[in-house]
Length: 117
Image (cartoon, rainbow, N blue to C red; front, side, top):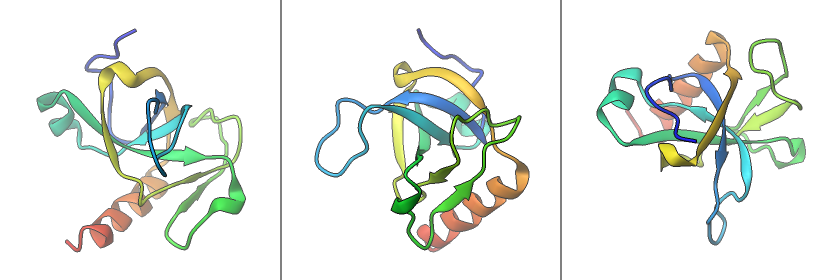
């Protein structure tokens, strides 16, 4: 299944991270789209942040996300903000939901810090 232009910033997708190597995330897992809608239309790759339901794996900058009716996650999760990756749309399996604007602002604030902008 190929996901087309319906991908938008702030949405959660089930993404196939395999093949991976070393300390990269593996398997099929939720991921947050962090690329701007304008840039998504211009590129074959989409920039995402992986999520984990392993709450013990939280670092200081990671962002906690509680399940709700909009994100449709199965478990409370952590957005692994330092694990920025861009993947081809072929790795996107299906849309799960979207995060709220407050959480998206937290992510964007972190990205400013991450890239020293």
